[in-house]
Image 1: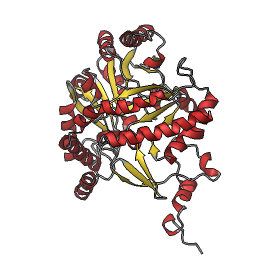
Image 2 (image 1 turned 45 degrees about the vertical axis):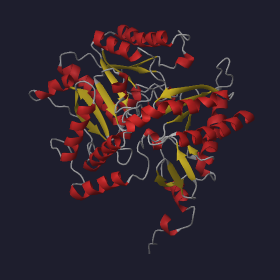
Image 3 (image 1 turned 45 degrees about the horizontal axis):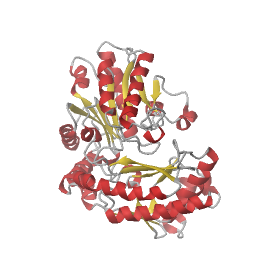
Image 4 (image 1 turned 120 degrees about the horizontal axis):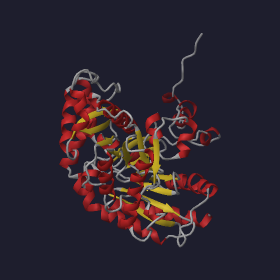
Length: 465
């Protein structure tokens, strides 16, 4: 005789956490934390800029889920858009066919993208969009008579996703070691962390020129006939929000034009209002050849990514038997596309981009107050996207060693910030930082709440170092 399974809905107050521990393989998670009595945090509700756990505790979502929930939690309009579309057409692939929502969204994104970025290839997420962009670059050069151009240049500490190709482009050695060998042909150059500039530390514009010129140097070293693309985030996430120095992106564009190399802006995080415009490259005024995006496209209410390419990259596929033999089952999913359309409507109706531009200075000024703490070395970022670098010595910029960073970030800060009511990221991909990317709907009251919690917890962290 078989027994009837007992599911979590039929058991006690910790049942969800217990079931998560026993069955849910969480992403980027040290499961040993929970094997010996740790309680898995279970988030059960969201409204506006806040979420609640299964114990009834309330938290300010200082990371917008994962740089994603632009319009905040609990937006009925987005839920209703998903439900309405699911009732009409829940799923159909865009493999040689089309459906209205994918068509409308592609047209809308093409109209909003800078320059002639008119062709939209949908994916399920950002890593897939990066993978798509590299594959397109390779095939484009093969179809146009330059098959030797396949290599990619990206920046140190940059994160571009988990698929094998995207992970190869990623510049975080520790994230890659377990999965090697990866896809060959990727090379790394300096990022734009001016706080730790190895050259021109007293002149940001000169530093930006130096960093950009390292790309030209790498192209020359590898051979211009072998390099297909440069991948960069307009504001680099990993390492703690590195904005582009004045003139940097313009210089990268010049270099790519000089060597016939494609400039790919990975806007998985920075697009859809995070930096105060639909695309950060649009606000920065520089024209890439491709944009990869995801996350905020639907405010996280449904999974969707997009690679948007210039018209010239599509030209070879207009003729003969040429086909881009690449795709994803759920790319351009009807429900996700409908949610994205409703989300873009909310951006317009509530003037979200203007709201970010009007308030980004206040957000920065509020976080800058933390600079009086001995543990805070640098506050940097743009829009609603900031990193706070933590140091042992402000005067020398001395950072923490590996053991100290482990104790500080995972041993104390991550849990202490969450217990204090703030969900954000304490990270050591690069030097130790706290990252903030809240929903785009917040203003000064939430800025003050974030600063107050950070001040209290960072003060305590310094006292126990």
